[in-house]
Every structure is written in structure tokens, then in C-alpha cells.
Length: 131
Image (cartoon, rainbow, N blue to C red):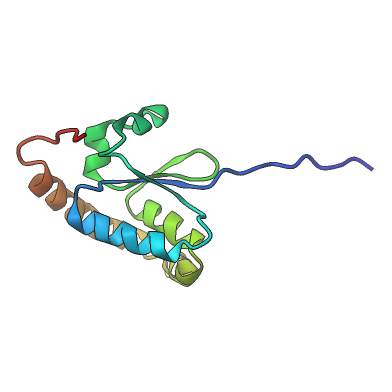
């Protein structure tokens, strides 16, 4: 009998804007909920070079939430939130509910409007890399 190879999946990575008070508060909440440290949280404003490995520009990261799933694929916006929620025990039901009710498309429309406003307000004088 052949043994199946063990495939180690990496945990998801979420890139967030730690300089945005709203983003910081939300991610801080998720980090507190992530007691088992299922997600790698990266404040890209402190480590902008972390984006380079995935080909994500600083400006694109500022425009919407980016994450990398365990398979190494980049996900954006609502898909990033679904990735977060699906890995946090107390939010899994919400991820399943959104998928079951097929709410992803309307939520993406709403999120994209919010993200454009946030980007405009946050980067009205150009997004600067802070160190």
C-alpha cells in the first residue's frame, strides 16, 4: 500500500493598512479572535517589501484588501474577508451564509464603493510608504 504524501498548506496571509484607523481596529478584532493564529497578519505600511513576493504594488494594496489563500493565490476585497472569516471559528458561519445566499456579488459592489472612498480619503495627497 502506497502512503499518500503529506501536503503542508501554509496559512493564509492578509495584507492590511495599519495606518488606517478603521482597518487597524477591524484587523485588531480579527487578531484577537484568531487565538490559534490561523492567519498571518501583515501590516504592509510597516513592511512594504512583504508585498513584492506576491507582485502586489503598494498602491494596489492601498486600494483594497489583499490576501493570499493557502494555495498561494491572491484574493481581493470581499474574497479576502471570506478567506479571513472561513479561517476564524466564530465567523465561519458568516462565510458559509454569504456563499450559500450568493451575496458575494452585491457585497463586492458595496465593498468596492467603500474601498474607492477610503482610498480617495486616505491617499488624497498620494500614498506614502511610512517607516
